[in-house]
Length: 202
Ligand SMILES: [Zn+2]
Image 1 (cartoon, rainbow, N blue to C red):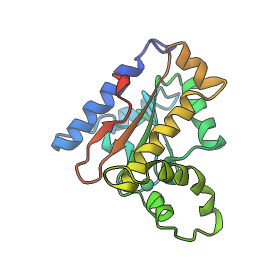
Image 2 (cartoon, rainbow, N blue to C red):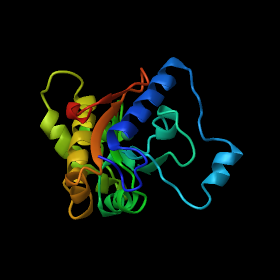
Image 3 (cartoon, rainbow, N blue to C red):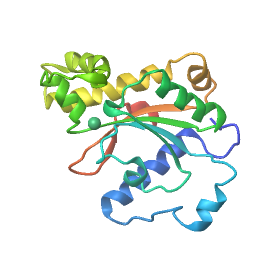
């Protein structure tokens, strides 16, 4: 399952991110690739080890949560980590042009976008454009054991990851060829831990 440049595989990239999250949890941060040398080494190009789609929430910064640095993560963010053509196009660019071997969709606890839709808050302007996918996840998880909106955030991450994994023509083909791994994860604001939502990835 090697990427085009044989640099790193999807599972290896995932292990790197999860190891970084363990450092984040333990407070033993390495803050890799933050120096001038790293910055200058990236002038001519980038080979990020993962593309991470997550919420725009200021409390959920992927580079910090995974203790990575410049050039390590191709970050795509939008409130509620939903998907549309612009988001998918960005991910397609990462996997096909930058040969990123891992795509991660990361939902999170206490997501304001999910809570607002759950509470039936009247969303005006363009905010309302975010709601259909969130609403579907809320409907699917209503009545389930546990915390409704957090369950919906997990469901939304799983659903979004599945949509990306099956998206034609670019990502689905690369997944079939074993060159890209798509996973869903969940970030807990309270513990700082990122957990896997689809267990077959490792
Ligand atoms: Zn959120």
